[in-house]
Length: 121
Image (cartoon, rainbow, N blue to C red; front, top):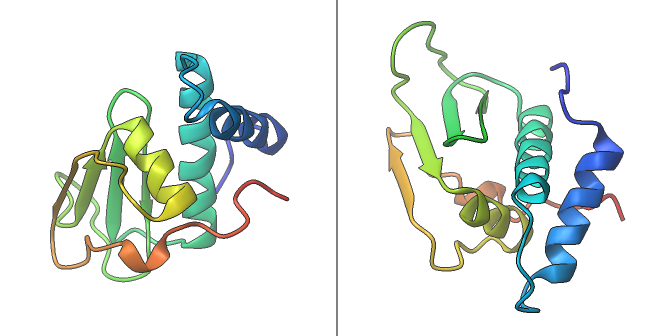
């Protein structure tokens, strides 16, 4: 997969998100967007395939996980969530109270989270 977000830029955005989390500090939309795009790309890199589509509306979408793939139309296995919920899953394995919409027999991704070493530390 060809990355669109530079790894160092993505990790920096994710670190900034982590550092400001819980501080009451407002998150910059661009920082969240970069962190989400980086982690989506990282997830797709680690778990290649086309059997599940993960959507974070207005920010990005990927196809990942080995298995039967789809080629056209709405995929049978879809997970959709907002950016902060995605980042919470990636970092902690929990939704942090956010909503996750999923459909399909392969849409349970709980065994993939938290995403190890995503901060590159």
